[in-house]
Length: 203
Image (cartoon, one colour):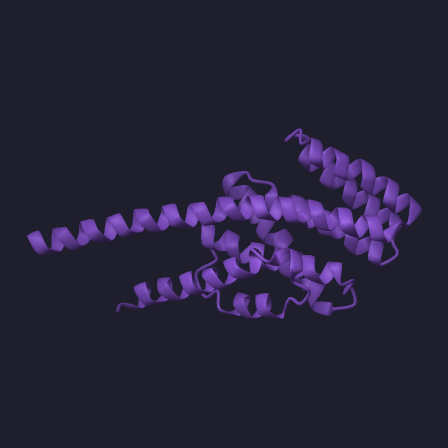
């Protein structure tokens, strides 16, 4: 088995583990297993790919769980948030998709509220509102409206419930896009390999 095929096999196994956890994300309370999976994502992240998107999505799910657990004191959380931002900017530059930047500002609004900085929490919510306005999503408009109310009242329980619901909706939708893209990309690569194999035999 060549190194490239072996690496591809390892990545697929890792993504299958991620898929299992993702499908149960609503009930996951500890990010340890996702962190372990992240460390096995060994591939070239310098260029855009669906695998790179899956890597960033794993980070998003780690941050999501830690924010639900109010772990803003965890130094690694800020590092993960910065990685989402940097990768989000890079992915936007390549394919003009705001998804990870939208998630980043969604997270930062909750992060700053947990840090008792209401103004920065509202500022991040405004950026989220501006980024999502072009999609004209009733769910995002409702999220912003209710979240402003909950932040103003310091109603953390309702904030947490709304944040959890909307984040799961956004992540689930993007997860489906990524997994579909990975399958289609792997099929294209397989056809190329078969073509090269046939040419090698014929020659």
